[in-house]
Structures are given as C-alpha cells and as structure tokens.
Length: 228
Image 1 (cartoon, rainbow, N blue to C red):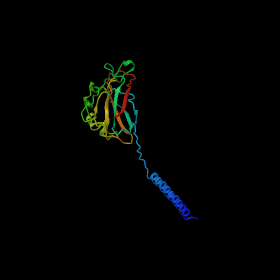
Image 2 (image 1 turned 90 degrees about the vertical axis):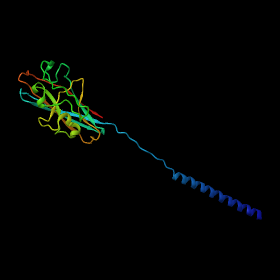
Image 3 (image 1 turned 180 degrees about the vertical axis):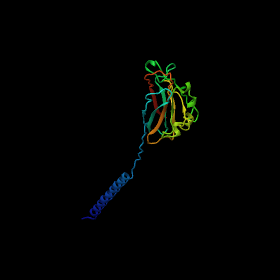
C-alpha cells in the first residue's frame, strides 16, 4: 500500500467521525430546545346571577268585628348576588277606586291604610305609622315588615321604615300599594350576601268595624324579589 493511499483512507475515516460528531451535536441541541419550550394558559370563568324566591302565607280566617286579625307572608330568598337584592309589593285589586281586600265585584271592601311610600333610602323614614295613628279609627287593612323573624336583621327590615321592634307603639304600618306601583318594602345591599336562605316576614293587620258587611273577601298580592 502506497503512502498516499494510507493517508487518504485515514482522512476519510476522520471526515466520517467528524460528520457523526457534528450530526450528533445538532441532534442533541434540537432535543434540548424542545424540552425547555413552555406555554402559559389562563383559565377564566364568569358566574351568572341566580335568585330563587318563594313565599308562604297564613290567613286571617274568620274575622270578628272589633277584634284585630293577623296574617303573615314569609319571604324566602336564596341568591348568589353579592350586590344584594330587594323585594317589592303591590296589590292586584288596588286601584284609584278599589281597595285591596274586597268581595267579588268589589261589592264590599275594607278600607286600605294610606298607601306605602318608602323613604329615599332605608335610613330615611317612609310614611308608615304606629297602630294608634291608623286611619278610619284603625278599621283598615295594613301591613309591615317584622323585625324579630328576620334572618337579615336591620339590613332588610329597615327600622326607619317599620320601627325598631314589633312591639305595639313602635311597630309601624302602611297600606299596600296599587297594582300599577310595586313599592319596595325591604332592601339588602352589598355585604348582605350569604350562602344560606334569607328569611323575612310580612305581617298584615286587619280590623273590621261593627258595620263591615259579612261575606268572603280576598286580596291577591304580588311580591317580586330582584337582584341588585
């Protein structure tokens, strides 16, 4: 073998080894680049407002003239609205000429206490009055939001509107508004949210005079709960 042939083969072998090393290095670099590649992901979600509202009521039953009769409606609100909620009340029979509690065709009816007008805020007094100040010698239909049965306390019951307690002389009453005006009777704002049900009770007062006609009377009402 000639000296030229020996060095040519040695050079070829060296080139092959060099090519392998370069290829292996490039391959390793590519793998390393894939391993350090990363992508950031952010998950987002928006929870919609949910509000469930139910009521349950007791009735006046048989009313004896001269004796006060009482009835109630319990308001049950379950909501995830962190801004709070409010409740309005109106009477379906009440118009400029008809009273709320009436017989069929409004042949006879009970006088309504002066229609409720709330204050501009729950800290501002509305037009509710104590029992001794009811119109028509107290022979009226009236209502109020009770304090003792509330699971929200003064947040919803508003002492400026309905009195600081349910005691006679402090408790304040008003008339149920007409079907064309749903007036706010309680308001729970931001900070009132909880995962539990919010319970409040509306109390109705009724006194019949000795001259109140006999018969069956009814007063359909509409309560509406709305999230803020």
